[in-house]
Length: 303
Image (cartoon, rainbow, N blue to C red; front, top):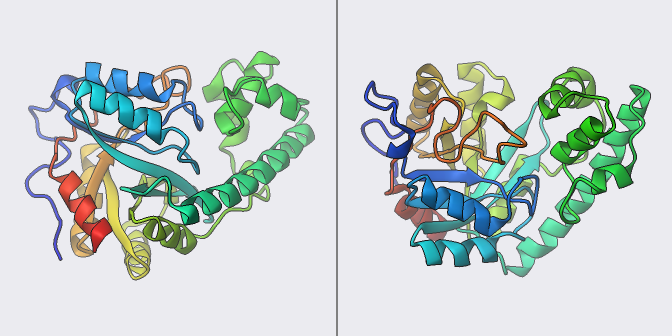
């Protein structure tokens, strides 16, 4: 089965300079996980940016899907219910799930387990920061979050408020995205477990931002091929910070393994990622316009 898009799916041609040309953004976060804005506000921003098809993909939770879907219907925007699952790997590895059934009992049970693992990671991260001389507490972190979900942006915000970092970017650069931090025990499900969870919830699994794995092209292709054998169906080739060369590489790998090309900005809100705009990413690098991807992702989910 071939779902590969044709032409220039990520809009990296010379004429792609206007963010308003973008029509699709399949990687959006709300404040139900680590985003800045409420789900309905994210959808409003997507509408104002001229997007025609979006997916809300909060980390390890489906808590923002119902509100997002209602708002998308109100604004007349195509909507795909999604999730982003953090998985175990030497580097950052996230799995996107599309067309999941947010009411599926198996998904709710798995999300509860994922959130328990995330809670343990938060505790370990706070202990790591204490060893670094940063004496924030879980209560400090919770004060930065609108709900029960806690993530690194909330930790970074607590660090900024306590005067340990000038801004969120500095908190990540100095402490929360370092090799020392990555050595901190952070229990996560495996990529295969995540793919199985997405499939069990009726969805399609796609590997998010493959550059975060820090693998050279051959090793990445082999890794993607292995994940496909467990049910991976898509690869996020078009991303809010990717150059033309990066996009071309990932599209080629997607072609090698007959995977769906997906794309999104990874928008969290400008207070969290100041240079990543909804629909267009950083400096208009994202201009993803493949509306047919919805049909391809749905077909893969139903397969």
